Image (cartoon, rainbow over all chains, first blue to last red; front, top):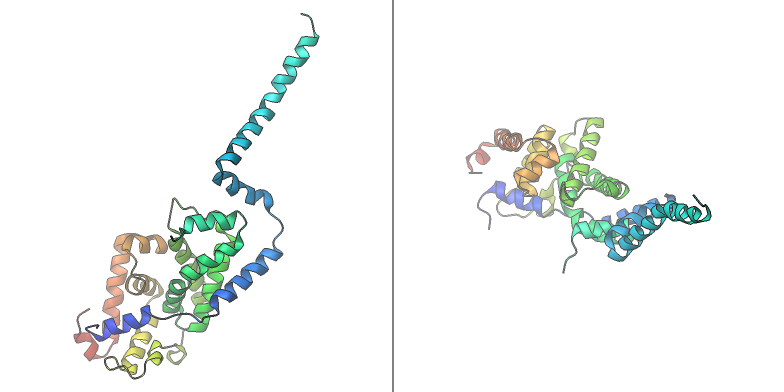
Length: 83
Length: 181
């Protein structure tokens, strides 16, 4: 039980709800947006990598292999020459 | 167990757009109430709510959970949308306001007239005061969060709420002035 008209008015304001179809209307517009948007799979990959430890290790390993490959190539080529 | 907003945002960003429905269902009522408090009529409040959620969905990658709660970020978007709408719009005529008094015309305590008077008084407040008042008194958010949404200091928020209450009192009938807020 509220004790004054102002609190009564506030209580009514707090109980106001939107129409029941609002969620569906929003989601329908979201789906339309999704269809119109170009495929951004590389962008979506980032949060997936952040979430999965295995994916993080795979990315680190890949970066290490790519980063180390020039040195491996140099080491291989160096064997072919006599100094 | 309820999934946190932060987790849901990560899922949506990872491609599970359907999880955005959970976010919408969770926050639509509070965003709508806030928009209704600012713009004054249901139709425009629903439009603003839709636009705010669409803007949130489009810019979801820009949300930083270390800086603010998701609801704070969402309220900030809704606030900006409402402010833009109010800038474009001519002043509201009092008959255009959707009074919530219509919901319970046989209320024993508050007459429909008094409730409508409060609605009009709220609509007549300067928009910054209205925003702070709605967030504090209707959404019952802490001052720190309101300051974040309104991008101002806690002191300014407190003074806006105080001035809003004073102004509401001064705009109302003498019968309301007597009641303690």
